[in-house]
Image 1 (cartoon, rainbow, N blue to C red):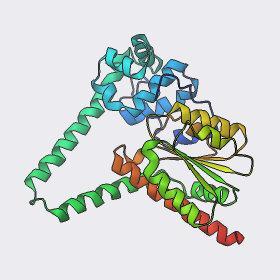
Image 2: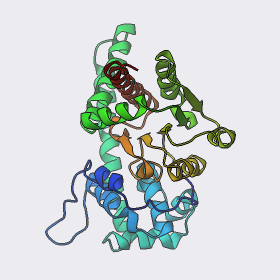
Image 3: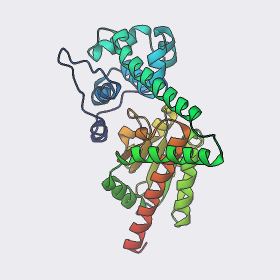
Image 4: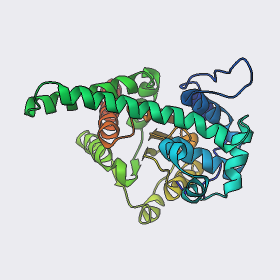
Length: 301
C-alpha cells in the first residue's frame, strides 16, 4: 500500500464487508473501541468518509497491526507515507485522545498474539519428539484452521452469483499481484481446462496493453493481497468504467480495489501468513471453478 491510494468510495460492497466484522462495541464511559476487532469494524464502517491521508493510514493500520503496535510515531509515519500529525488526527477522528491512546489497543492485541505464540511454542517443546509425521499434522491443522476461518465469512450465495457470472463471460481476465500468483495460476488452469477463454495477467505494466481488448460481455477476476497495489487499483477502475463485472478476492478489508467489485470475497479471516493465504485462495478458486462447471452443465455450455 502506498500514500497514493485514494479513500474507498462508498458502495454497497463496502457496507457488506462491514457486516462481516463485529459491530463496534462501545464502553460505558465513551465511544472508544477497546479491542482490535471492534476498532477495525469502526474503521471499515467510517472509511469511505475519511480524508485521503487518514484513509491511507487506516489501510496501513489494518495491514500492519504489529507495526502500529510497536513502532514509533516517526517510523510509522515514514512507513505509511503520512505526516506524524496525521497519526494524531487519526486517533482523534476515531474518538481517542490522540495516537498513543489508539496505539494502546494495537499493543494489547499484539501482546496477546505474542503470549499465544509463546504458549504454543512451549507446548511444542515439551510435547512428543518432533518427527516428519508431526510436521505434516501441524501443517494440515494450520490449513484446516485457516479454512474454517474463511468458511465463516464466505457466503454460498456469492459463490453461486460469481460462478454464474463467470460462466457466461466471453473472456475472463484474471489480474493478480505477485503474492497471489500461486492461487491465480491454479484458478487460471481450472478455467482453461473447461475451455473458457481465460487470460492471466500478473505484470501490471504489460497488462495495460492486454486490457484494451476487454469489452462488455467479458468478466474480470482480481486476486489481491496486502499491501494494495495502486497499479492494480487503476486497472480495476478502467475495467469498471467499461461496465465489465468484477469478482475480487482480497485479504485486506479496506481494499479500494474490492470496493469497486461486483462481488467480493474477503480472505482476511484466513490469516496473513503465506500458507494460510495460498490455502484459502486455492480452495476458494476451486469452489468458484466447480460452480462455473455446474453452471455450464446446466446451460449446456
